Length: 147
Figure 1 (cartoon, rainbow, N blue to C red):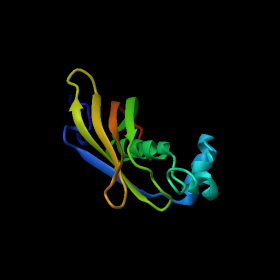
Figure 2: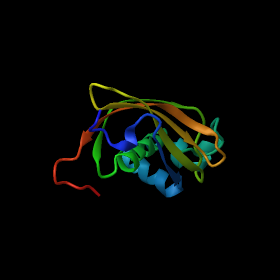
Figure 3: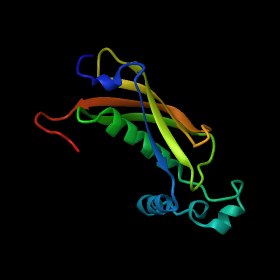
């Protein structure tokens, strides 16, 4: 489909990396309202199966959104999530460097709808999340440049 930005052709890949700090986890807890002690309390978390605090899984989902909406769409389009399915396969600890990666696996011929494989890995390349996103690619309104 001709109106899909070039960053969304089959095989296109983009990623972002972020150090998961205590400050980020604390801020996300406030924003999301998810104040589980597993994310915020060292003593509590030390007694769980993880042995230490872990980041919210939704932080990784947000990183996927950043890859799609900022890295891939850039100034050309707005990304509208139609679906997202993820599996959390390993915990993300405070101090981990996480890289979220999206790869275009399918582009519909009849509509600007794209399916992507999504993965997140930590600093030792261990996969911490995987899944699939389906997005609608909407062009920016005429005369509007974002960011």
